[in-house]
Every structure is written in C-alpha cells, then in structure tokens.
Image (cartoon, rainbow, N blue to C red; front, side, top):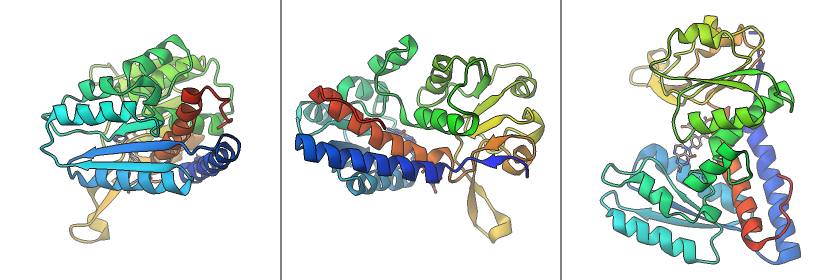
Length: 298
Ligand SMILES: Nc1nc2c(c(=O)[nH]1)N[C@@H](CN(C=O)c1ccc(C(=O)N[C@@H](CCC(=O)O)C(=O)O)cc1)CN2
C-alpha cells in the first residue's frame, strides 16, 4: 500500500475538542450553551445509532441536546408542527431531522419548514442557494467533512485541481461538487448516464465517490497520487468472518485504490465520523449567528 490514510476519526475528534472549547468560551463570555434538537421518525436501526451518537457527542461538547423520537406512522402534519415549534423555541439553535424519513412523509416539505438560520444540516434551499452563490451559510455536514479531509491531504489551496464527483445526491454529491468549485477546482459530476466513468476518474486529482455502490471504484480508475474521498457506507456479507457475518465497505475498492492513490479515506473511519463533528461545529456557528456575536474559528 502506498497511499497515506486520511484518518477521519482522529480529525473528527480534533474538531470536537475545538467545539468543546468554543462552547466553554461562549458559556463564560455570553452565558449560554448552544442547543441542538434532533428528530427521528421511525425505528431504522442505522438512523437510531446515528441519532444516539449525535445526542451523546452534543452533550460531550457541553451543548444542550433535545431529542424527539416519533413513531414511524407519525403524520407529516405532526412532524411539520414539531419543526415549527422548534423554530420558535429560543433555546434551540440547531434543528436536524434524521434522513431517510418514512415514505409517507415528503422530506422536501420538512426541510423547507426548518428555519434556515437553524438548519444545521445545511439542506434548506436558502443554505443550498448560498453555496451556489459562493456566500457563507450553513454548509451540509458530510460535504463539509469531505473538503476538510481533502485539504488535510493536499493542502489548503486546491485551485486548478481536477475533481470528479461520483453521485449527484442533494445530501452529498451536489453540495460537495459546489464546495470544490468554490475552492477553484475544475469539477465534473458523474452519474449513471455518464460515458466511460473509469476514464473520467483517471483524470481526477480529487476523486469523491458518493454513489452507494459497494467497491464500484477500482484501483485502475485512480490517477496515481490522487486524493480519494470515499463517502460510501455499504454493509455487505463477509463470509470470511463466518456464516451470516457482515462488514462495512465504501464505494471504493480500498486495497486496490490504496496501491495507486496518494491519499485515501478508509471505511469505516474516514468521512463518516466527520459528519457528526461538522454538525456540532454548525450548531455553534448557528448559535452565534442567531445572537449576532462573533463566531469562533472552528
Ligand atoms: N439529516 C441527516 N440525515 C442523514 C445524514 C445527515 O448528514 N443528515 N447523513 C447520513 C447518516 N449520518 C448522519 O446522520 C452518519 C453516517 C455515518 C456516520 C459514521 O460515523 N459512520 C461510521 C461507521 C458507522 C457504522 O458502523 O455503521 C464510519 O464511517 O466510520 C455518522 C453519521 C444519512 N442520514
């Protein structure tokens, strides 16, 4: 293996320490603790784990955590009413509705109902539009994490680099492409209709894989020395570990790609942990902006 491993777990821990210090300073100088409300609808096992981690890490950073767990058959109107009440609650600085939502709920309508100033997920059209315009807003957490890890690998100046983003989801692909464009990268977004994806990937100094297809990106798709950012978290069968056992893999064939790349994020332990760390940082940012006080450097 030649690639440097980009340790997202360690980087996320560093962000949490910075957030914790910032929260302590806000308490000391301004007398408040930021508050994050997390809403989970239903019993999706992965979502339950993510929400529990969000609650625990929020508290560990010294912030207030408010959790709403609703049954899977909650009517959309009830969820919208909860979001509106959180918008009005001055003790809440950040609102996050865990995705995916049950099929009977229109997730666009729910995101639209969140006050953009409290939209710590960065998914509201106002925040999405701010990224398009290159203006500061609340930036979606996973894309934010991707850019931080890319800069850790390649340095702060990404100008002129070729970036290829595989996937065009609202949660990751589209915003990460825009963020890299705002860093003056030349960005190409690839998707299911793109011709000759392997050849396109071979031109990428920065390759972001966010398609949700286990190990789709092979070693010979990677440009020698490239930074490979793997957003995929796919649970697959692992018969080598025993009958019925499973393991997590990314969208990149890690061992193959690591032979060619200059730097690569592992799965688990790469982009995933950055998502929650960036959420905590966004909550502090939102709390400061709402109160019109100077934001700490995070
Ligand atoms: N409202 C949102 N919903 C969802 C988001 C989001 O950003 N906002 N992202 C994902 C889930 N997610 C956080 O919500 C998340 C995903 C993965 C991880 C993580 O740390 N992954 C670990 C592996 C964990 C495991 O063992 O399964 C890793 O990659 O190392 C954290 C948060 C969808 N929904």
